[in-house]
Structure formats: C-alpha cells, structure tokens
Image 1 (cartoon, rainbow, N blue to C red):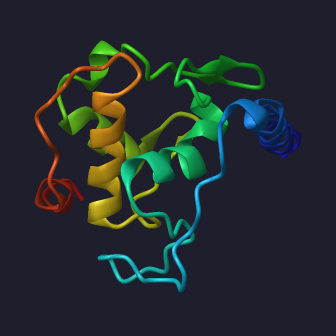
Image 2: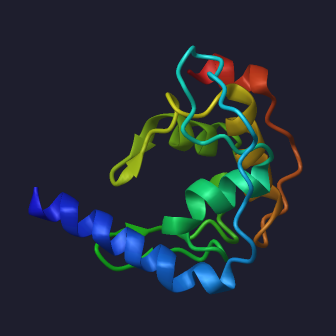
Length: 139
C-alpha cells in the first residue's frame, strides 16, 4: 500500500513540476460521454494531443522523454517500439507493469487518436494510421 501511495504521489509531483512547460491544459469537452464499451469516460478529451496532455504526459512527460523516479516511465520520443501500431494500441488498452490499462476509460476513437498522435510526434515518423476499427478488434 505504501508503494502504491508513494508512486501516486511521485506521479502527481512530477506532473506538477512539469506543468509550466506543458503549455495550456487541454480543455475537456462539455458534457460526458460513455465510451464505445458502454463505460463512462473519465477522460472527456477529444483529439490525440489533448488526450496525451491530459492523460499521458503526467508520467511520460510533456516532451515524451519519460522519467525515472518512483518508477520508470519509458520515453515515447523516438521510440522504435511504436513502429508496429498494434504495440501501442495494446499498451493503451491493456497496460503493462506500472502502465495502467485504459481500455475501460477511453473509447476506440480516443485510443486511435492518442496512438496516432504519439506515433507522428516527438521524433516518431510512423505514418500508417490506427483506425477505431483496429482498436475495437484489439479489445
């Protein structure tokens, strides 16, 4: 329990420490929506950049270079693991190690948007697009 609490506190502190460099906070959409799985989305952001800034940057950092502290948060910048689109889709949906699975919180469009954003920014040049149908098939 102490480890989990410490990790949450460290992630919060890291987010706050880098907030000034992150640019303006993403604006959530008005109203809330259930996602394509029938679950309420606590992340009502539209578009890959807004989802990244609002959900992912707290651990992976605004520049996507990752961080080491209470845990190791891998860099997404210039990451060769992102070459195969199925890999980041699986990571977002199901998680791995300290990365929580977000498949129950993000709908298929949101997952596709954030994966496409990360794969085409931060020095990544992967241009094949993930479609919501691809995410649905991976669930």
